[in-house]
Length: 462
Ligand code: NAD
Image 1 (cartoon, helix red, strand yellow):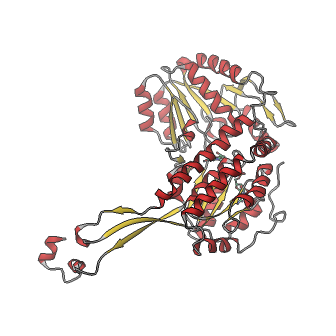
Image 2 (tube, rainbow, N blue to C red):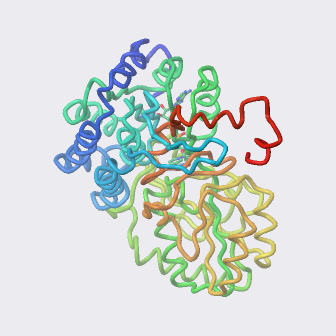
Image 3 (cartoon, rainbow, N blue to C red):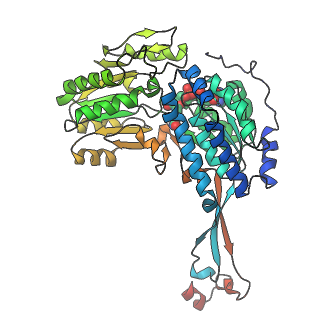
């Protein structure tokens, strides 16, 4: 399962792939609303007509249950594709803008045009959703697309490679499977947009490659998403929501709570509630069909190392062969332990008491900006304060993870958690160039107002 990334093992990537697909855009093939709608319909049909195959692939790659596959992978892409299908004609329409007196009479508008060819590099943890959701935006924008799924989710990658040619226009949309060698070969070519989701190390490689061609990038990265549980919080609800968000995909979620900072006054009560929530949601995680597995043994080893950063008060058991790590709650973890400062990407939840919300805000200000930050409090001023005084890609008030389900919210990071945000209309804008258009009649020749010589009279008008 853990494919070693070597350039030697990589199948060849056509060095003219980007240029070939760009032709589909420059020829005008991808511009019409009909073409865009047909591709978006293709995505919808590719998912709905092959549900069992997708479920099987995700079960093979991550031990994902059919329910979780539906909620966290398929439903979101379907929603994005259907929404874009319904709105794309409106999004393509020119948007008028007022022109100032100095250039009047004139008509100004913004026209969204396709950027060209987009390269969308996806990670393994939500290998369907994180591949296709950006592609919805690219196709709605009239771009050609190359998808590069993660080699660490090989069943999903193979299924994408099989099905995409049957549902989408092969002259403009391709899937290239393979490891880092393949990705490197792709990155040598000139793309008009690169959309990368994954870890920080590779993001630097992607950014450097993009800089060679001045290609705009979106980097969707990770980070250790913190939770604050205040003394005023509704603890049973907080615990239920934290456990749900943490254990989806067995913690292998970029917006999962990484660790919990809890007001010391309610630490013990929270632990009691977290235990109860776990018992309710995953009474026997080892046999539960709704509890995922680690993607690889190498990833499991990294996750298990973090258990050593504290004392396991719940869980702690591991079955390496089955890629199983039990939901594990950790006590006695230092605020600067790797389990807290680094993204664990597994079902390990450190619970770290702090004196009060002041300590939480102060600590958070010194840390890299996470993809999401969550706070649970009954006292609204505590939530307002955290919303104002901390920075993160997203902020959940008494909720974790569910912001990804709100299409109107931008999904993306800030600082170390990445840049650029998508979903809904934003995805379309991200993959489009907003072209400024100004039209001016030749008579009357009023531009003379700004053409020298600038007289006192002209000056008074401008
Ligand atoms: P990964 O190892 O699957 O890598 C992601 C992609 O990068 C793959 O397609 C891979 O082939 C490619 N790649 C690997 N080496 C490369 C190289 N040298 N050059 C070019 N491409 C290369 O995924 P990962 O990095 O382990 O992903 C996990 C990380 O992704 C976590 O940090 C997580 O938080 C983050 N993530 C972020 C989001 C988000 O939306 N912001 C979503 C999911 C995951």
